[in-house]
Image (cartoon, rainbow, N blue to C red; front, side):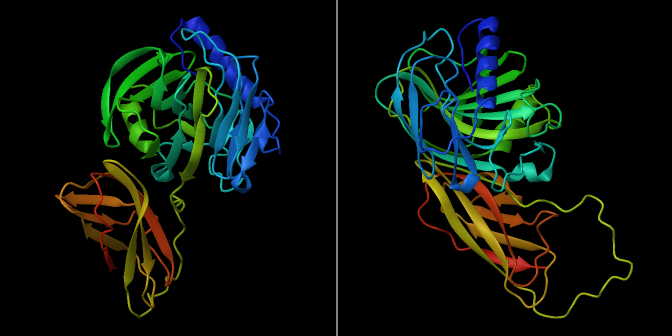
Length: 378
């Protein structure tokens, strides 16, 4: 939520203030938010928009929209070798006691080792003004132990993903390497200010980004900066302005979640019922969720089109030359050249007649159309 080029002391002070400030926010109902820590729900409570002007006393106002927000006034400036003025944001989940309410599976956190974690994906579309000094970044929070909805940050990790930066600013800590993730190259920065802050800075700025959270978290874990026993609590997207900021906008923001797996040790029935006779069949429909130069995000919905329940499925398609799946959730991927096959996970293979399930994925390469998908039921 905050990015610094200063000493550890400055980082501790500024980050602590920013986090505590948002905690104090009383949800606002107005579409225009000028209160220092004002917030308001959008999409019937699925997301929260927060002003979070924690690093400056100068006025900042944001207008909420049905899918994000726009900064309409951003007075004042902060030195670029110190903390930013604010982090106007839209988020899903809970942050210091302020929670989204509709469909929120992060109220008490979601452990990264949980199979459902692989189904957390997000998309954002942003607009940037030509003036000012700012970054445009995701801020994704992890706790070391299972939190309650009112718990603050507890020495876990803050995963930042920078889409863009303008001016002489850089993330917390120092640069520790590069990573090729989600079809792009990223500078990787790391620092610790009471918790780990890991920042991925895109070498080619973009206004649109779609990704699976697990894609970046797996890289964090591989660097020893996080653990799969930690708990995801919120997915946030917004801006850190140092100078100016009027015109910064999140045009669209979404977080999607996968299917929740059944209990680990379900009790078997004492008198199992023989499977009914009937036709086992399925259909699969490919949808392009979002697209950008050099890549896209897609989903496939598998539906039981037969007259009896199925226990498993496999969907397959072939891309034109140059396209491939780079990450996938809610299914098991097999890929050979341009041919893709996805089989069900243990928790989403059983479908009653007419029931459906969806898996999602990231694709590298430019699409020339929507491929036809075959489906086989078992």
